[in-house]
Image (cartoon, rainbow over all chains, first blue to last red; front, side, top):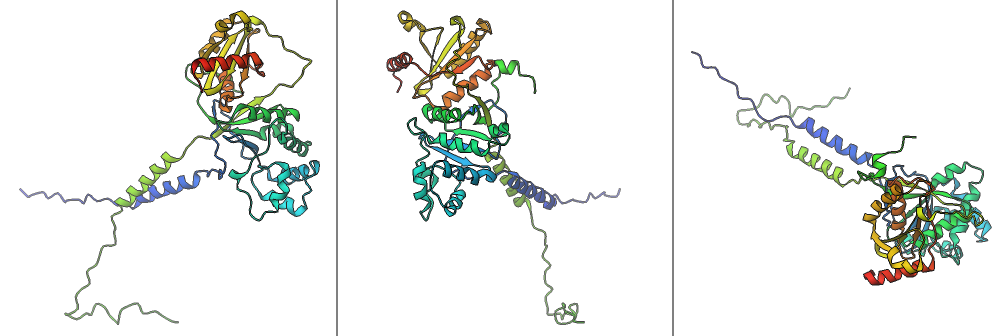
Length: 216
Length: 183
């Protein structure tokens, strides 16, 4: 009987293809991840069951832990208009060159009377050193800001503006500051705005979970 | 046309007997460690990426209209007061001077949901009204959480409202805080 020789096969497999897949996936994940915009102000927003995504282009009022308020004008097309509007209405006496310079700063976090002097500085004040926009009831400058914003958006779709107005507050921020911001909106007859929150699932067993509202 | 001579000094197959044959090294590299590294990085990035996307919650503020005072039935009203240190206080109906300690109760955010639901079930929906009052020392989180609680409990809009706190209520909160040792 002739011996049947089973040829020994090598156990090594070509790993090139697998390696390719691994790195393809890796590069996909890295590139597909949306980078968070640099957050100079660290704010931990509360969570809510709301499932609507916050828009990218927005007018964001940030409320930090220590009660300072900042405005970020995300709509680049209107930013210059808003700044020149407040310059005009509040008599800040800014020259066109100063306005241009102001337009470049991402945060607004100074009382109105400090803006001119801060623009003459060579280096910008970092956002975490800014004192914030005063919101206390004796001098609520947020009212002036919201007024300028609503002036600039006066002719446009108001519902779009309401969707853009966002308030992002820190968990630890005290209620009165938030109330003053609400007051600023109300004084300008804006009754609808939105709060930035962290998405959260509806708790199992709750009323809303058992009877979800019909999809609209 | 110019041509490049790639052979090394003419005819490499005519090597003398003294010239050692160069050992042909395999060009195949073991890629296993590289694959390992690739997948390790993938898992690292997948786990460290926070998927939480910020969402937006709608806020509807009422118009300040002093001519239009809303009347609430005593039996249908529940007042929720937000205090310092995530504490919640509540009472039903109206505060009566001689029954203060009976009416005014304290609770936490964990238990308030049951209380809201119980009240909702026990009351005629037309009379139902939750009055939310935030103390000066309550936080932004408290204010949002209680509104969120309202939507979790499916309280229809218009049946809850934020109202300013009265001096009596503030005093009661301070006293209860002192008694419970909340700082």
